[in-house]
Image: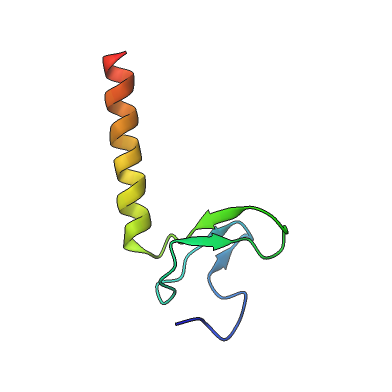
Length: 62
């Protein structure tokens, strides 16, 4: 469900945290370009953890 207020969930204008919003990728409204991830969505955290694990494995192997 989308929130009635467009600014609900935005922290400092760059970070987006809204558990009611099911989207993972959010377009930044004020900048006119760019995207951010919804930190209130569990899939965002799963994706970020996987990226960190892959990065640590690659750095330790190389």
